[in-house]
Length: 612
Image (cartoon, rainbow, N blue to C red):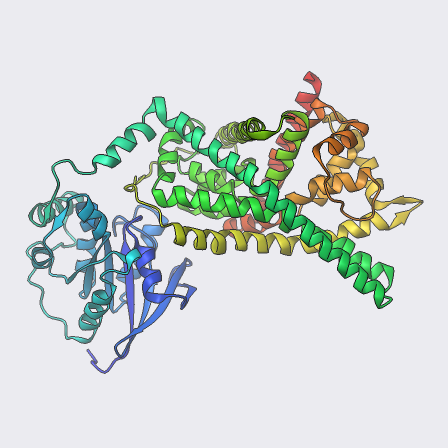
C-alpha cells in the first residue's frame, strides 16, 4: 500500500434506522452530492470531508440487513462493498440492538480488510441500561470500535481519528475470535453475532420497558387503528385551523404587492396586455399558490416529521399491513400514503422503499387518491360552505373530523383500486418484506423544523411555483382571448358542460380541474373567475359570500359531494406526473397514472349523481 496517498474513499454501511444518515450529515456537512456507483444505476449520497491531512469521500450506501441481497437496496450495497472501490468501511450499529446489527457487520469485516464498527445511539442505550464492553467487542471482531451519538456530535472526533489511523496504517492480520467465511450459513452468522453480543453487552432486567408499553397501545388491534386515526385527526385539525389566519395575511400581502406592480407598470405606460399577462396572469397565480400552499405545508410537514422522528411511521405500516395484503399490495404503501398527505410527489418518491416492482407500481398509481396538501384548501372550503357552518372550536373540530373522513375515503378508494390492479394488469404473488420497528426516540425539534421546512416545504413549494407559471399564462390567455364574442375558457366550459352535468357538476368545474393541472390550489379560484366573468384570478371572500355565489350558479349539497369526490379522484398535478415519469421511466405508466384516477372519479361522481 502507498502510505503517501492522501485521498480515500470510505463506505458508510448499516441497517436502516441506526442513524447512518445522521453520521453522514455530521461528517460531511453541506459538501454532499448525488452520484452513481460504477456498475449500478442507483443514485447515492456522497460527501466529502477533510481531517488532519487526509481527504475522505464518504459513500452513504443503502441501508441493508445483509450482504446476501434480498432487495434492490441490499444488492446495491453488496455490489459497492464487494467492488473493492472503498479503502475502508464504517459499519454503523444501533447500540440498543447490537446483535441484529452485527449480522451485517461481520460480513463486511470479512469483505473489507479495514472496517470500523461505529456503535451509534450510545446515549439511548445508556438511558435504557445497556452496557457494552468496547475492548471485548474489538477483541472478538478484530475491528476498531467507536461509540457515538451522532445527533449530539458525541464521539465523532474519535471516529475521525480512528478512520485516519486505519486508512494510513499498514493492514495487519486480524486476531478475531469470530470470523465469517463465505461458507458460513445464515444460521452460522446469526450464532456468531449472538455469541459476541452475549459476551459484550450487559442488558437491563427489563429492556425497552417504555417501548413495550407504547407498543401495547399503538400496535394492539383494538387500540392501534383508533389511536392512529386520532393522531391524524389532530394533525388535520391543527393544519386546518392553524393555516387559516397566516394564509389570509399572506394572501393580502402578496395581492397588495400585485396591485403595486400593476400601478408601477401603469405609471411607465406599459401596454395593458403586458400588465395583464405579468400581474393578472402569472403573478396572481403564483400569489395564490404561495398563500394557499405555504401555511398548511409549514404546519403539516413538521408535524409529520415529528411522527417520523418519534418512530411511529413504521407502526402505521404494521397496523395497515393486513388491509394492504388483502388488496394485493404491500404494507409499506401505508407509509407512502402518509407522505402523500403532504405532497403526492413526495409520496411517489417514497415508493422506493417497496422492494417488489409490481407492488411499487401499485403504490405509485394509487398515491394520488391520498389528498395532498394542495387539495386541502379546496376540501376545507367545500366542507365549511356546505357541511360545517358553525364557527369556534366546535366548528374547527367538526371540520377536522370531516377532513379526516375525506382522507379515509381516499384510503378506501386506494385499497379498492389496488385490489383491482393486483387482479388485472399487475397480477402477482404478494411479496414478503422485513418491517423494522425502530425504538421510540425523543424528536429533535430544531432539526425537525429545519429539515421539514428546507427539505420538504420549500422544495415542494418551489416545484409547484415552477409549474404554476405557465398555468397563469394559459389561464389569462384563455380568459382574455375571445372567439366569436366568447372567451376560450367559456367555450371550453360550454363544451364540457354535458359531461359535468352527468357527474353532478358543470362545465366550469371540469374546466377548472383541467386548467388546475399545474397546481391543485388554483382550481377554486378558476371556478370563481369563470362564474364572475373576470379576466384574472379573484380572491375568495368570506364563507357566506362564497355560498351565495356558488348557490347562484346551481351548486347544491350533491354538487359539493361530487366536488369532494373529484378533488380526491382526479389526475395528479404536473409536479407529481413528472415525478412518476422519473420513478417509472415509462410514459405508459405515467399515462395510466393520469387516466386511472380520472376514470374512477368520473364513475363515482356519476353514481353519486344518480343517487342524489
